[in-house]
Image (cartoon, rainbow, N blue to C red; front, top):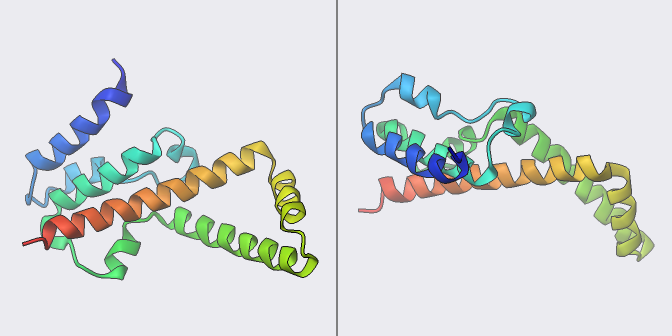
Length: 144
């Protein structure tokens, strides 16, 4: 069985089956991974579907606020993203001082290594998809 094909439909079906139920057991099954190691087992685009399906189950908990959206992103992702943004800002400031953006980007890439760049990209994608899923849930909840 190819889970890349079946997982999206199953995730949304589970969310719709328990729509507005507030069932904590189902919501726990739809929770996002809580470590970078576990994040490797979930495709980034499936993160959005999990956030959306969990919000469908916990329909009455959805709030149109930034705090609710931030709570959908696991703490390890929020911390990692803050560190990545800080390192990018330092690299950009150094590049502006030296007037050599290409040299600074190459140095930053060389310092991270291939695995570090892949992990950074995966964390950024997962964070973006989690926020996208939260926005979609807010849109569905308050659309009419």
